[in-house]
Length: 260
Image (cartoon, rainbow, N blue to C red; front, side, top):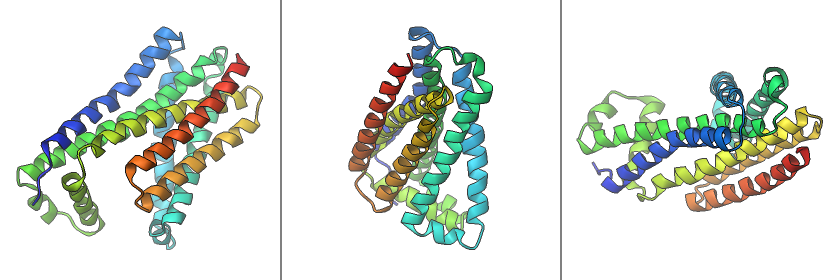
């Protein structure tokens, strides 16, 4: 059994630390430098957990349990379209509910849109990057200590296939790959904050911006899943994602300046 390179584990650890640091740094920045309220940050966290991690995940489980669920999972295009649509609907609806019904008292400060995005995107970074890297590090230790065979013997079905794929990724991937998650999460946070500004502005009167946020989220997620599904090199995927995030950020900044 191949071993996980030490440098890969070092980069996993760095990515893990950065994943958990992102929401802390964002919170401090928007609170201390921009004087945003505290509540929008934590509402962003709660809404992400409820709408994305609970509601959206529940729908996924229900859909994939249906007869056509396997068809969706086994077709890159269908899976990308479905996943992009669900992510856009649940996350942007969550933003809309938060801004319209929960954070009404905080709408006097437009910076609170960014603070909400920091909570939403920051918690996503901590869970997607931080927690994932903890799992990868634990599995890497098991592989390097010769314990992976015992683990594989106790797993079956799709879980076994996924675990073997993960082991291959950890042992065969170039070490730098484990730093790309940092880049991806930074771009993702930029996009999450930008989308928050658009939905915030839609609640304050520019209703078409909610549709814009839905479409942007759908297109971005769908495109990235398709690129990954067709095994486009990760560096190019992140480059494309970065370009999208920056374009959306510039558009959102224009809207934000108009609101101010």
